Image (tube, rainbow, N blue to C red):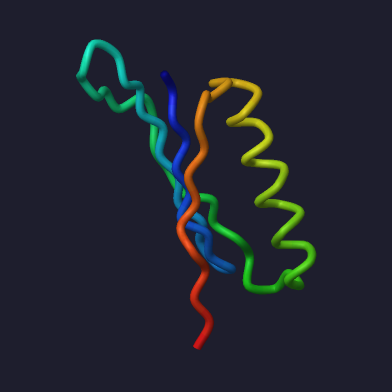
Length: 72
């Protein structure tokens, strides 16, 4: 099973991919999507969507987990 986890943010969105097989976890990949501060929120969301879409197509995860967004 492959799991994609995402920590959303409007300036930096983090992600990690792990594989769970035979009761063991293995890191596949991790990284960040850095978003230009000059972009509008809608443009940033479009970039996040495009980058996550690439990950979904490349790794084809079975599960997806996303952290709640907190606004202050």
